Image (cartoon, rainbow, N blue to C red; front, side, top):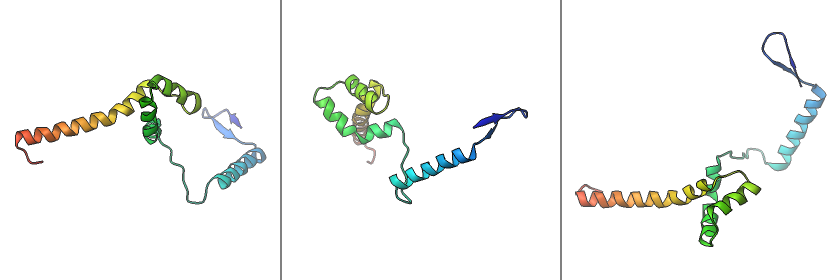
Length: 113
């Protein structure tokens, strides 16, 4: 692939046989790894952490620290800060506490709910 000069705007040119072969290889990998109509969902790291939240909680309950878990994930999956682990775990507790307080406050104030 080359960038041509002259117009001030980079224009890419391609070695057709080389890139055609790369494109064919990509299509073959797609064919081998997925069925038609199937899509891989791209999400954020937070979504991955939420998917394994139960596993993380089990590790914490077993005595592992958020730092240890973050280091293991950074070594084998993706870079993550210990703070992200604690935020995922505290997120549910905060939500439940807030909801309970709201229900209690409604009952105390005489508001319907």
